[in-house]
Image (tube, rainbow, N blue to C red; front, side, top):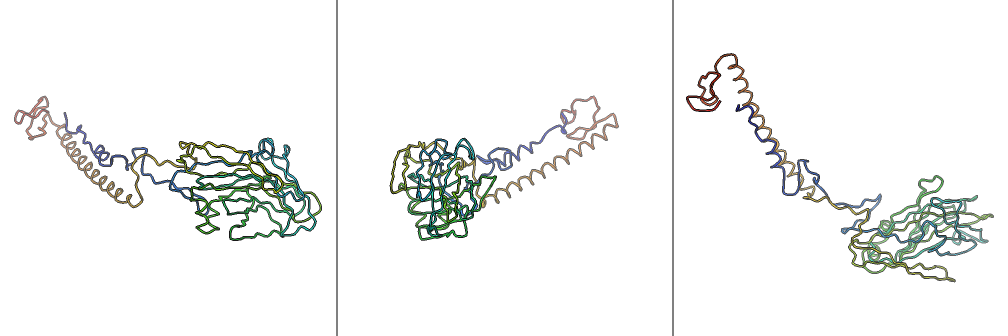
Length: 362
């Protein structure tokens, strides 16, 4: 057997040296180097050290069942109803009609809308999303979503008039959100948890989003009219209010009730939402199984890998150089009827199978 055909396991050496117990840093395994997952939002994101599960809080957010689960608020010159003609999706939407009220001012506009309430235990985050459509012939209108979490309130204005006052107090803040994706329905969405952390002090935020006590949560879809002569209309559809709770919560059910904010009527209906501990949120990322390296640990590992690759390259170059010399030697001996023993260099006939001097098999 010729020495030229003998393979040196250089590549195998590289793989063995580059394989720590549970991770392949040379890129030959699917685990790779992973980093812990972090939720990302546009501004001051909510972050949690534990996996979170999304918990929808609203009943009938698309108004497919009419006004079930919703309660009329204020009622100062307007009404709410189910619309089956003007809808964003599905077969229904909420329509709010409002008549100008005599003496309406910036501080006392005519207001109409619908609300829904819930109670959440172990609240860690809160998000809202809704689609709206205006059908008005005046600029003296405003639309807003009012969110209450514990004793904190946020007013999200999508449309305002020149008379709208974006007031703020210690426990209430007003935020103007520009319209999005208006075709012609417009989208209003917000990370309520992140906004509460930004606009309120840390103690107020912790009382709502870092405790284990039940937190009352309320959403109100509102239409405001400051003047004019004609009845005005607006529509709401596909409303979502989503809470984030720990996915390992031992309680398997979470109950909340729908209540009215009107002083004249009040209804309460318990609703049970199953929240098994095995459920995981789509926002929860499971790190890839394997050896997790922090950024500070990456540099020594990469330097070690580069050194090992350099050593392996030098070994491979040395092997190729020896093989080249043997090829050159055989090329010269092919021109004669004799060959030389690969071990001792004794001249042999081409028909010899082994060296008579040292016994090496040719």
